[in-house]
Image (cartoon, rainbow, N blue to C red; front, top):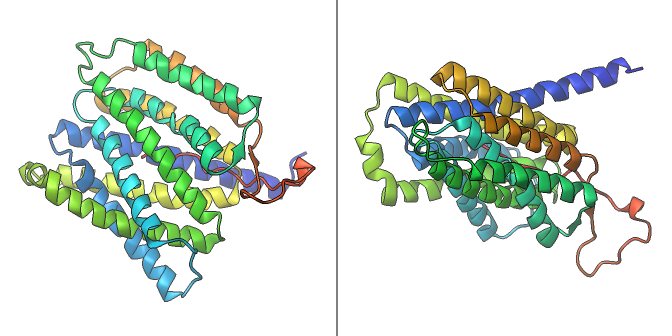
Length: 330
């Protein structure tokens, strides 16, 4: 029988998870609206996100004089650069006539990308369940890519799929770097990571806009609707970054992975309600493969080996296995 405390905790986890899924779906909706209004400026859209993260979390970190994570300055600049480009490719994927529900499925490739990178960089060891789960996720991606992506209904879908795959890989790198930083401390490390990533990413974004996007931003007709769409995108992304940071501190990665799956349902509904675009039948096959893959992958946590050079425990039940930090999509 579930006691009141467990019920309350699971209810809180569910609420956080659904909030994350809604934020993910909202970013896709706002990006699609901006694209259809010829107001899509990928780096410009995310600049305000990073400025907001820097203002809130850097200020809090230094005003409260919290202990710092011992990482070199270049680490934060590299993290900022990778995260900027991940969001850049993600927004770029929504340009043109595309089915954004399909793009959301491809972004789930972040999970197998993180798995592969974690094996080599974070010394995590995976079991059969993880390999099978990743295989199903890859199969879902292959189904999408082998489908007719140049149909008259969605002429830009093939290009959007490619940009989404690039974004998924860079999100995997960003997630891995963020995990490495936050695992070196408590909640203070989360605050520092969000703040310093936001600060460095804001500078990188400003430089990128000045070099590549200045004419694009100048050509946009900033109607009240486009301003509100940009504001909605930034608000959804900011909420996503903050809620994910908190969520992964209070629950396990299983709940996180399962919560992300509901974003695909929200995407399918939003695609039909907001844009009158039904999702193709192949979507449901790819979605089913993703569901199976994520469920199998989440059956067990990976084993975290000690740092290189440290003795390995004889009994692996004594090895601590902190929750992995999966995606973060925008």
